[in-house]
Image (cartoon, rainbow over all chains, first blue to last red; front, top):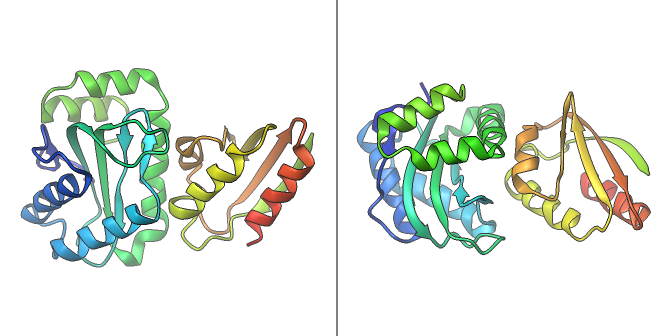
Length: 148
Length: 83
């Protein structure tokens, strides 16, 4: 399972992009999806430096492919208007963070991104996400939208 | 209207940096642009649209450009994919 209740953080306490990534990575570490937090965070931040992973609609999809990841995962974090250096200049409220081991980064990564992106283009999915106020509700939304 | 088929040559597929660069190229165009892979058709002026394709290394995609600057845009896009 890519995501479960343990991989959902509502609300994330941190208020900066770097802080949010760190906080989510700490959770991924505690549930054993990554073996090395510093290495994973560095991979995610390196990507963010090259270009922002904010995709519009107040959503960011940071991702890291690195051997620090022991099992592919998707995380969800609810944040409050965090500046993500988005192209559209808008702050981010929803963060989907992806982790994939280096060796299988090719297609797993792309499939997760593609599926999630397709859902995010739908207004209904975005409102359902916004209305979900706890981990179980997020899981229900993801299930309903066949992301789980 | 200019239409051509190309192959995704980027090792990591059409996401990450290549996707971000492609959005920039397309946003400069006045013409409408469509990228088609299998039965999916997207507008590459949006990063989310491009990610939706899930185009991996070696995948074939069709590109359709339609508008005043279509020839220049098609040329730029061909150059982009042949990089």
